[in-house]
Length: 423
Image 1 (cartoon, rainbow, N blue to C red):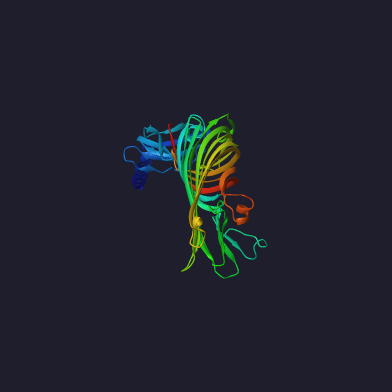
Image 2 (spheres, rainbow, N blue to C red):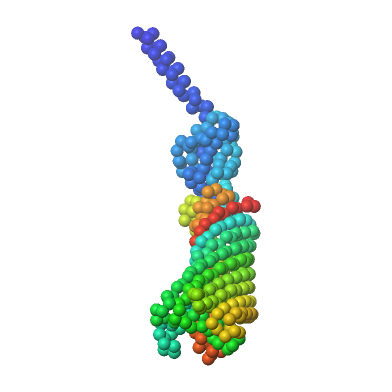
C-alpha cells in the first residue's frame, strides 16, 4: 500500500512537471505603446512572429498595455498596419516593452508644419449662376401686357469638381477643375392668343427692334460652365489647446478662371413664313483673390478626425463678353432678312468672396485616410449677359445686349483620400 502511494505520488509529480515545463519556456510580455503622451488602445496594436509571420493574440488587456505569452524569438510590433519596432524575447520570465510613437499631430496629418500630405478629391454639387433668355411672349395687347422671355437658361446647374490639396511644411496649395451644364426647350402654340417672336440684341439694319407674330415659337437654351484655378495658403500662427485639437489662421491668395457659354435658339417655320434667332454668348472671367482663412482639426474617436475650414476676402475681377447673334426672316425688309449683331465688351471690378468646407477623416493607417467632404462658396460679383426681352427696351430705351454683374454661390459634396508623406 505504501509502495502504491509512492508510485502515485511520483506519477503526479511527473505530470505536474510536464504541465509546468512549458510555462518556463515563455516570456510574460507586456507591450505599452504611447502616442502624444496617451496610451494607444490595443485595437490598433498587432504582434507578429518575425520568422513565421503569424499573428500572436494577446492574452488580455492590462493597464497599461496588453499582455502576451511569447516563446523565445523575434516579434514585430505593428500599429495601424505599420511596424513600429521589432522586439526579442528569451523565453523565460517577464518583460515590459514601452514604445513611444512620433506625434500624430502635426507630422502625421500633414495639417501642421513639419508634415506633408496629398489629398485628391472628386465632388458633385450645384452652381447658382446668372440666367440669360431668348425670344419673347406676350399674353395680351401690346403696351398693356408684360413681355417676358420665351425661354431662359437654368439658374442652378449640376456640376462636378476634381481637385487636390498638397500640404508641405505648413503651406497649402489647392488645385481644381470643374464643369457643369444644363439645357432646356420651350414651345408656344400658334393662334393661342399669345404673341411671340424675337427681340433683337440691338436695332436691325432697317431700325427695327424685333419680330412679333401669332404663329407660335419653339426654341432651346443651354449653358456650360468651366472653371479652374489654384489657391495657396500660408500660416499666420498656431494655437493648440489639446495635443490633437488645433486651430490655425492663414492668409491666402489665389487665381480662378470662369467660362460661361450661353446658347439660345428661337424660331418659327411653315410653308410661308420663316424666322429665327440664334445666339452664342460667352463670358470669360479671371479672379485674383486675397484674404484670411482658418482651419480646425479635431479628433472624434480613435481613428476619426473632423476638419473645418473657412475663408473670407476680396478679389479683383477681369471680365470679357463676346456675343454673336444671327437673325433670319423671309418676310422682313431685305436688309433684315439675314443679319448678325456682334458685341464685345470688357469690364473689371472688385468683389467679396467667402466660403467654408468640412471633412470627416477615417484613418486607415498612419499614412492613408479616407475623406468625406463638403464645401460652399460665394462671390458678390460675377459677369453675366443681359439680353432685352421687349422690343420697347431696344426701340424706345436704346438698350442692347450688354454685360451685367450678379452674385453667385455653389456647393459640393464628395470624397477622396489623404496620403501623408515625409514623416
